[in-house]
Image (cartoon, rainbow, N blue to C red):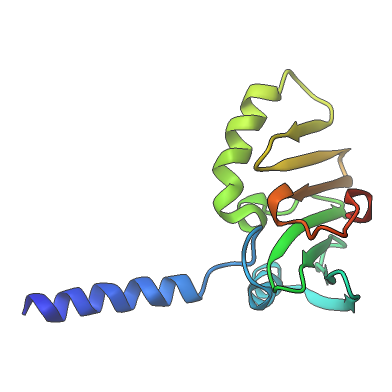
Length: 150
């Protein structure tokens, strides 16, 4: 009986892992999960030798760009639009790092700049005009300039 319950628990955990949302550090296949979560259309996928950008167009005019390395890892995300995206969705396992850093940095309104060794986030805007970028420095391919993420 114990073996059956253990097997069931493992199966549930594997299923939950396979349905993980696209996120920083996630794989390229998870971009589709983001699209479904946002109820967005994939506006385009722009492949290059250095990375592929998957651009998602939300129903409210929001645009999310997910940068995927040749190894298939989401190393950066960028957004712009009339509202902030679901950062918990986009940041995944890095969301806790983001929350702690944002809480320590925030002193009121204005742009947010987090520059840590494990996460960089630059975000700002106002009603109907938000934008930002986030990336994991260790995951950015060596030949990619940070200025390319926008």
